[in-house]
Image 1 (cartoon, helix red, strand yellow):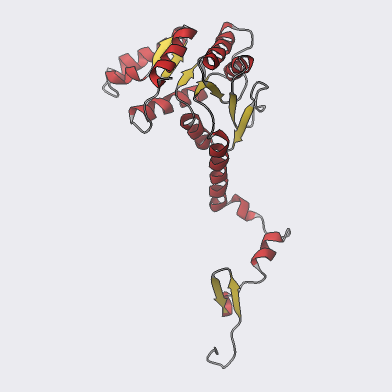
Image 2 (cartoon, rainbow, N blue to C red; image 1 turned 120 degrees about the horizontal axis):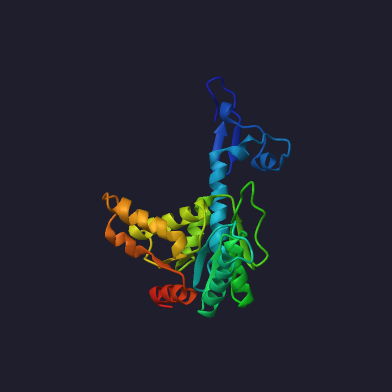
Length: 248
């Protein structure tokens, strides 16, 4: 095939793509892949981030797909070891394993470590789903199956997808974030209802009162929303609630 001047244009085949004339690119696809001196701006582009996000979902789904029934336990990373609150976390982790559940936490220290410790001491499955943060020190030593995530929303998906219920120990903003995300998903029926147990009535009482006397009283939520969760101070009751509502 000739161009108007009678010269054969340059032609390039790149997989299924054919480029001719001014559209021809220098080098080959393999050459650009293997060229270590090429530009690196592409690793900061949104298309590349999409691939990273996709890879995190694939790793999470692939690693956790064969977990037995499990409960996600949330709580503060700042809970000191040896305190009654920490020991309650250990007891909950043990009791969940004894009831036939695996234990999933955020993998950090404090209340998360307590639940993982209890699960490990009961010789159960102890999972930690960590997150890349500037001030975190990695997974606690009681995690026997761990994943570290770059993106919060991928991690949150794993907490919900592979848990049959939540037990929420006293915690800060991260714990509140997980709690209200779970409540919202259940309220809007984005997930099949599963039990949410708040452990520690003294700690959670003020929040429950605010929901009842402010949020619901002003019509921002309904009285039925108070039925989306339970509050208890008893380890056996917490385990009984998650077992009963999951049919486990």
